[in-house]
Length: 306
Image: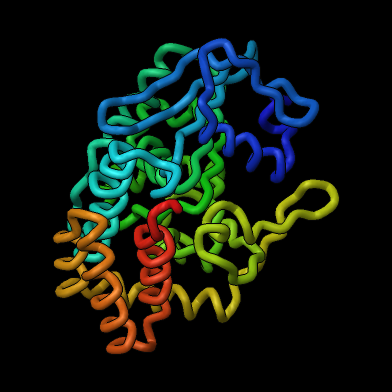
């Protein structure tokens, strides 16, 4: 049994968090009592896609880095991760248009290159937030799906609507090996409340509502004494959320135009508050709009650091 397969759910989350650290070539990665391997490749693409390759004699682990918050990021990460990737993905989903940001394509090329570099190895993929989105698209375009031993994806927007029939068939081949963890109270997971129209198997996290950014950063995850994650069965709350998000994703118009026009933090502060409040009042049945409002107001609309 490989190292990754011996990790508990809690330890896999800790391993995924490593993607937000400034890992360097040669760093030895320990998770609990397990030596996952040594960082053998650090990738920081021009479009902002970042990933780390960790190797040991029996397997290869790939960590796709997620988005930095506005406070923790820089003007470059804010531009690359939000305006060039996250927001265009959201707009594409709302308008149901296939427009794939550069980072997703770069992640796809990167994964295939690493698999070819380490032919014969078993690959374990991890990603949170934007890292999950990049991993989803990379898996959908993986030229050697048989090489993927498992993928663990956390709190990323469901990009199923953006995939071609061929890409959907590709991820369907790996469905039982891709674990897609979703906290439905996390605003970033907009559109992911589907049991089959998604990349991988839905793992419905047993969570409670809290401050949105904390929620997004695994804040609602609860673990059993053995390190396993507490999950829920599909219930009426989940199904209601799914219906709400489908309604939202079927409407474009004002919301997509608004997202398209965002170009600066000042404009966001002025426009988002007015527009999102207006839309949530107009469509009170759409709980997904509340999630979207939380995303903008608590992440994009943060006050400047004091």
